[in-house]
Image (cartoon, rainbow, N blue to C red):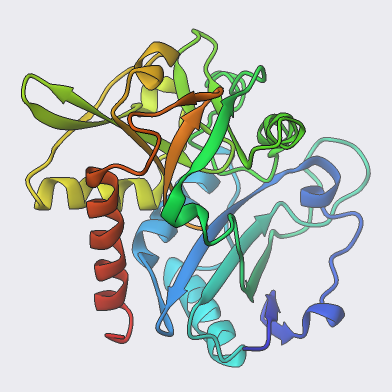
Length: 294
């Protein structure tokens, strides 16, 4: 694989890819993006990502100068040019070039960028043994400030929480919302498994708790239902995390990864649990089936 970048219709090598310093995405974080996986040469959950991209654009009054079909074609062309079988797409739409000043009124047309490369979120051994996380002191953006449902280029809220995780020597941090309830992690959605009565139940925060509606999150929720697991969206507090039987994270880049320690406390037995392992296996099967069958 050779990484490639598509910028407004032209495919280049990364070293030749250039964005103007007057671009409002660079100056003010004024734009949106999607992270998308490629498995077996095929774009995974392409329609779901396009739906979210265009919803984010509509929410910030950004008119994408391409149709969803044209955006998909740009990604497919870049994947082919990169000779990418298994990789990662970073799709970006910025407000475009404009004069200095926060107003986007005089910006030229929005710019569309597609990067095809690889990404590694966490060490491979963590997918087998699990990972430790902390709860961050950085509160998730309030929905009436900048809605977490918009996949904005302005990720400083998440970056500050990630710095806390780095300082604590762990790879990820859980973010709470303004009410003190669990929202999501800096780059992933969070799930727990609890025994309700005599049966396991998979639980995850709802969109009203201040989360991004993750594409992999939805895929895993659908898998839960398909294999007969009880799956609910509900408000969770740190207490629920501390007494959970299992915990795992989902994300396009992260895929599905077990969490075995939260704030220094072991989750369940301190090892990836059976439900988490079942869901990881089912997710891997799905991506094989939707790729080229490998």
